Length: 47
Image (cartoon, rainbow, N blue to C red; front, side, top):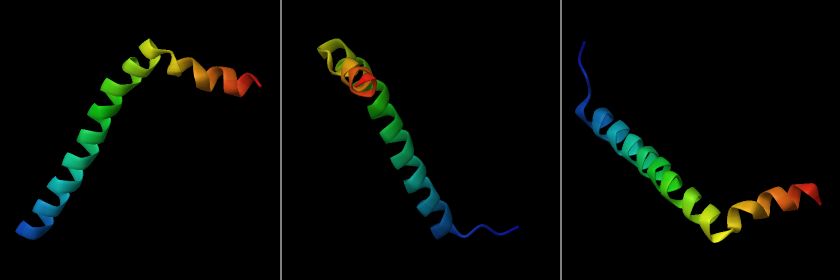
């Protein structure tokens, strides 16, 4: 089975982008909750 080097590089770039976004979410969500913005979505849903 032959693997196209360009395809592997493209997939690696996409994977890196997804991992970076997930890592950013893991960092940002607790910060927002600590600031108090995490409760905004709960109160907004309750009306």
